[in-house]
Amino acid sequence: MLARNAAPVIVILAAAILLISACLVAATQLENESTPKSSARLHALLDDGSIALQKGDSAEAEKVFRQALALAPRSVEILNNLAISLAKQDKFAEAIPLYKRALALRPGDLPTTRNLAIAYFKQQNFVHALPLLETLEQRQPEDFQIADLLGLSYFGLDRYGDAAKYLERASNLQPADLPALYMLGQAYLRSEDYKKVTDVFGRIMAIDPNSAEAHVMMGTAYDKMFQPSKAVEEYQAAEQANPDFPGVHSGLGLLYWKQHDAQRAEAELREELKRFPSDPVANCLLGEVALNNGELEQARALFVATLKVNPLYKEALFGLGKAEIKLGEPAKAVEPLRKAIAIDPDYIEAHYQLGNALVLLGHTEEGRKEREIAAAIQAKQREDYAKKISQ
Figure (cartoon, rainbow, N blue to C red):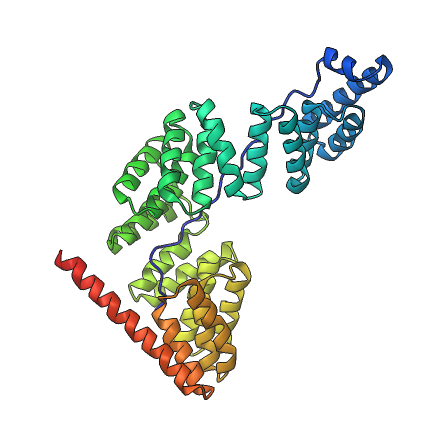
């Protein structure tokens, strides 16, 4: 059976809005740097660049601001706006050095610091975004966007407790902001604080009583709390609220699969694939169904399709390895099984199947060791569980 701890959730880091600094440079500043003729030319370029940005023509704005920067290479405002033009084209690697140049010219400048932090965030470089955001937060503790980005950055680094702290602050600053509430709920889910998940669920439902996403979030919490019937009820409510919500059918299918209801699981998974053909959860679970039905080639294809979307999907790696063994290709099973173990060193089934593959390849001693590892992990987990329930 597929080894997953929770129903799938859709987690999307909210897109940050690039705040554009004033495009026009103060005339007195320009006159100190240029002749009257070049100053007039510079003003004209700044006007053209500002208009291009307002129209959404970032490429034209980039072209114009580059010309402006050649006339005033030490202008913090031009450096910012050229960087913004690049960032709006997702050219963050080019934008970031320009923001740094602007900060070197005007240390501590708030608009530049914010824009640089957002550029790092959009690059998913959360490690570099965090110190900038923390500096901004100290100076602007009531700024919703900064608190939100801090929470999302910590979430991106899997630091869910810290993420929850800042997302809670963001939610308090703007209580009706649903994206912040959804991410707060996910942070509490990941930190296993289910009581607070319930609280967030209530706050979301007060704003949007028909929220499919909130029902999915709550269904996931119930699944983690080993309350399968309540989990199914929440996913069914989500499905009724919005049958086209991403992951609702695959999540419900996974719950049915855990309850050994293969028929209903397969029906839900196929509903998901009708809407989202590349959904990794649906493809992986249908691979398990095909594997159980002896449809080995189909199972292999489904696991491969899953891994094209998510190469680190450990259950798909395990399923592919298992399928290769059943197809008489143990040599092809070794790599995906080793990858699954690298992702989760305590993956009992992967150790055991890797042991089987190695034995079939004639590596008897190595295969025996993998089986022993699987048995040792299983014994340790049983011991830990016995201690937990005895407390």
